[in-house]
Image 1 (cartoon, rainbow, N blue to C red):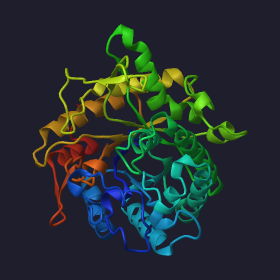
Image 2: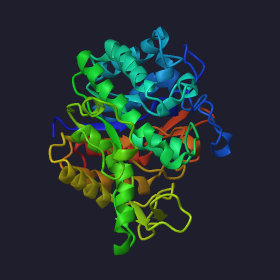
Image 3: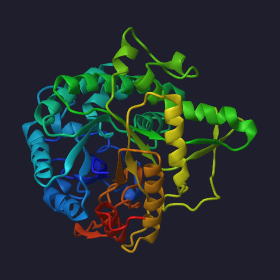
Length: 418
């Protein structure tokens, strides 16, 4: 598998720190206060200053690809207007350093850190933000397109809509339920316009990074609830991107203008799939405004986050994607990982990754990116959850590779050939 991408993933807000350095503007996550223990990402993993150390870890690990995100407010502090040169220079140096050591840069343009001034104007509830995102894309692509191997405009748009605008678990903390659905269309439109801007700049390979979760009905009587969840989580983004249509159950809620679906359905070179766990659903209880209730999946072991560990769910999801969209381009697993406690001897993480990597390889994917390289700021959970192959002591910023780091190195090198 000489062309297989063995990778790791991170995101800007979760690792960079330096939130008020280098001309960076505020993001919605800087101002989101509903975070475990009052944690902030002001320092995070200090990657903004320690990126050389982190590239050295990747070189030791032996990966041939690194998926990271660009901070929109570091490039455009207000989300519009001219570029912040210091921000572009930071990513330029990072990309050059990766190329120099033979690690392919894989770039996500948006991993949830909306510039606060754009959110003040309505954020993803407004149509205008799609045009702003296309302009931002053009700025970044003009500087980096000649060296980046893969591009993904938006990471997990479903989570932006569901967690950020529908139930308020993530920034910007809105609790709009179904009134949040216009954000899905604007995220999809931003994706399509961004793909076009990347193509215009000569980007080599453009795809996406959508989060997927198999929807399991609790009983045969709950199939309708499972289908409703799957439409919202799995197909509200994949369908328009790949087929130029929305699920029938949701299309009437989308603020579609003439030409939008054509703009969204752009040819993609690959499909990035993020997978963590399946979801079980049942018919909603009385008083629930949503068309489903969530049901615990308790017959499988769980991660430190309480997520069920089901490698076969990854196989199921890839199969469902290919059955629904037979023309889907080559699939990469752009995120797959687990949170476990603070130990370095992390046998449970090795077992998780082994099962999921086998499922991915059995499914014929083109690459696998572990989430994540290092422990990081885990959104509303702050520093309470640790996903890293590398342990980070947040007091000293010391990085210590876990046993899973050394296991993954052996997998990549072929030392573990089973």
